[in-house]
Structures are given as C-alpha cells and as structure tokens.
Image (tube, rainbow, N blue to C red):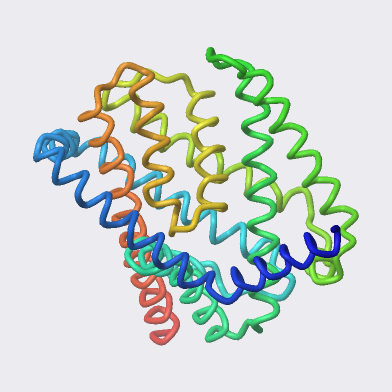
Length: 303
C-alpha cells in the first residue's frame, strides 16, 4: 500500500516537473486577464483617484527606488563571489523588475541572471546568491510578522504571530545546519550579521511605502501594520505563481484597505498606485544608474 502511494506521488511530481512552466504561464495569463476585466468593470473612478493623488505617487516612486537600491546592495553583500559594481546591480535589478511585471513568470529572474553572467558572474554564483537572498528575505519577512502581529487588533493575531515565529526559527536553524548537499554548498560561505541588516532595511523601506500609500488614500494604519503588510507581501511574492505576486498581493492589499475604512474603489486605486510606482521607480532607478555610469566614465576619460 505504501509503495503504491509513493509511486503515485512520484508520478504526480514527474507530471508537475514536466508541465510546471506551462502551468505557471497559464496561471499568469489567467490572472492577468482577470485583472484587466476587473479594472474595466470598476470604470474610470479608481484611475481618477490615482491621478488626483500624484504627490502620493511621487512619494511611493521615491521609496520604491530606494528599495531597489537596497535589494541590489543586499545581493552584493551576501554574494559568494565578487559581484558587479553597485550601479550595475541597480541597473540589472531595475530592468529585471520591470520585465518581471510585464513578462511571463521567471522572465525577470532569467533576465537578471543573464545580465549578471554578462558582467562576469558564473551561473553557479548567481544561483547560489539568489537562493541566499530569497532565503534571508523569507527569514526577515517571517521575523517582521512575528514581531508586529501581536500588536495588531484582529482575531487570532497572536496565534499567527507564533506560527510566523516558529517558521522563522525553523528557517534560521535550517540555514545553520542544512543537510541537503545542494543547499549546503550555497550557504557554505558564512553570512555576516552586518550584511543581514540590509534585509531588515528592505522590510523597513517596503513598510514605509505601504505606510505612505495606505494613509494617503484614506486607510489610517499604524506603522506596525505597514510592517505586517510588507511581511505578507514578501511571503506572497516568493510563493506565488506569477511575477511579484501579481493579483495575489493586490487582493491582500485591497482586503486590508477595506478593513481599515477604505471602500473598494479607493482600495483598487491604492493597488494601482502601488503597482504604477513600482514600475516608475524601477524605470527611474534604471535611468539614474545609466546616467551615473555615463558621468563617472566621462569624468574618468577626461582626466
């Protein structure tokens, strides 16, 4: 009986492995068109509210740009090999961030890996550092949730916080004593505590984005709620089938916004602002990195 169950699971896993990319792309396509139809059904009012809050949009763009710089720096800090210069990493992160929203699943990561290899990193170094970055991102998202959820007023918040704490502790211990050879080699190079601080800063910059966005449109949330939203957003983005958790994280934002006094139209407008500022912030960081690179090259050549 156990042999049959094991064989059935192996067959299911083989089928998933063979068709996972098709399933992910199909999921992305379905969610993408569902969002388009939903926005059409909402009419022009959410867009009008978004355009009226142009100062909020500029603030969100600024915090998003800072967040991209922090992400690029966190990759450099924990890289197992020498990473490209920071300006080049910002360019790569910005470009891949833009592509990950508008292209099928993993296109952004594929672009990032290709550009990193072009800059001299090996595929193994790219993969190992990306896994380390995702792992630490998960750790700090869980820790942020564990710390802030007990202070929020909703049912089962302390139980959820305890679950987050157990998950964080499990990830922390697993990173120190990994038994899987493939993962063990990726964490063979130790991660310094000061390098981990960049991941805490990632959560804080993302939290500032949510704090400004939610409070500017009409939902009066405390900063600890913004941290909790950041925690949930990071976790949803890492486990979702679509780039940046498109559709998944938006639903979470809308649900939270409606619980804090915003109507559906305002909540949709908030989601539009957050997504649009992410794209604009990425584009701004890309342009700024190219301009700074040109400036430094020009100054070097004129000496």
